[in-house]
Length: 338
Image 1 (spheres, rainbow, N blue to C red):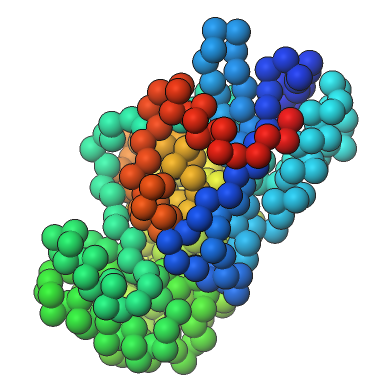
Image 2: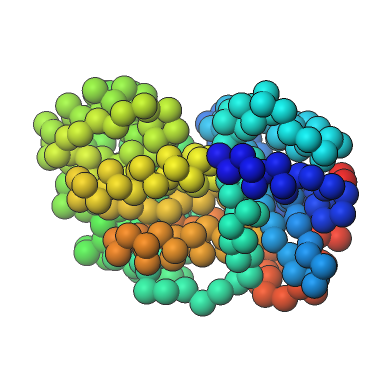
């Protein structure tokens, strides 16, 4: 991946690169596949040019989903920064660190970190937490017709009640449900028996078994979205029940892999959503810029699933980063490692 550019980037690194470790507080603890987080931690690899311009890449593996740890990434980057030459082994190791791959891609391609106006892309609001809070926020957002809802966190009975309550608020609502493989087959079947399929746009990864997911979806005429499978599957299943790919660029990492997935979606006429993993406002800006670029490049409608900034404390929720001064002020709050 960009071997020559990578070697150039880390040559004489003390002149242009810096590395920061950040820790941003969440408004409420969030459970990520058995890992409860109160703060979102990560690294910023920053390049400053002689003219004072900045390029930046964010490294933020997500506990419970990423195979690499933040410590793995930090050790790897510090080793690169301390040595002016890159070994073949270090290049091979990069392939095992998707979050670092994503950051280096953003850095080399100078993906904008500024808050930019959005193009005409559908943005899907994310709802998670206590049922009463979800219903209140749904109403505050003026009852959107499409909503993404995390499921598999409460009992399936309570989640069915919540969804029926939201349907009562807006009978036209359609859900993009994200189960993160937390259901078993029986729970998945119970859910589909109790919720009218007309209100389900698709369900992301209901169980850990792709075969069960497809068989049950076919039986109940429901549709599926692929999410976690995109991180591990060498080849993707092809079935009429599969409706969408939910791409998490910060977890996939490899830009060639992302390009292959976009081609696959075009070939099989699948919906595509670019989805966030509770990154900082800097990386969210870059994900938005990348989604716009991919939409223009492919002439393919790409939805945005980037509504995660609201999970942070209020000062971060409303943070806009549009100027060098704002970026520098943000970096000053992080711990500089290099």
